[in-house]
Image (cartoon, rainbow, N blue to C red):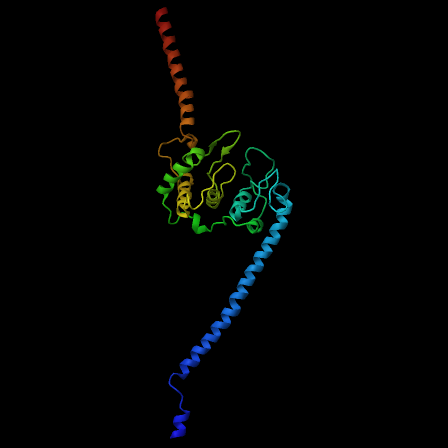
Length: 269
């Protein structure tokens, strides 16, 4: 009996063994799996930066310098972030065709993969705004009314109250926002391209930016209705005044001539 009792295992022995096995398994996973994943991510990022540097040397270095430090022909790109590259290259503004007061939007010459590689390289030069993900600029969860209020307060002075664009000084202009990718509108607010000021999260929160993007989609969408009828380009009092001047005043002149002609005829008779 004493031998049997000596060999009998403690009731918690199996539980201890199980916990030990789980601890060893978890330790092995923590030691190897995340490291492998992190290493793979680092390798992919390093490759993107390497390829981006090659693209930069061919298409950007002549103006921005071989290390993105800037030259007399182009500003420094240190610290502008991936979002600035995605906006400028994605909208075709960069590489610029020629210097001028404003670099216009045009068809871009890089693939999405190449834009990502360029953005990765420029981002490696210094910290800056990252490319937003779709949840940040999609209309889901946005307040269109609030976005309109924010847009009229911060943006309408240059872009017009519906984003149709407008003229600035010395050959510069605020481009139309009609047909612009929502991601690029969000990035423009992040980075402040060309004549536009940047709106960091301290001045316009991510939700505020999301609301503004949703507002522009609502007023410039394919299904947007104009309750006032003919919108005259949506440019406000300038075109409305011109329309009134040309057609209204013209109608008045025509009526005056007609009345005068009839009066002359009446006197002759």
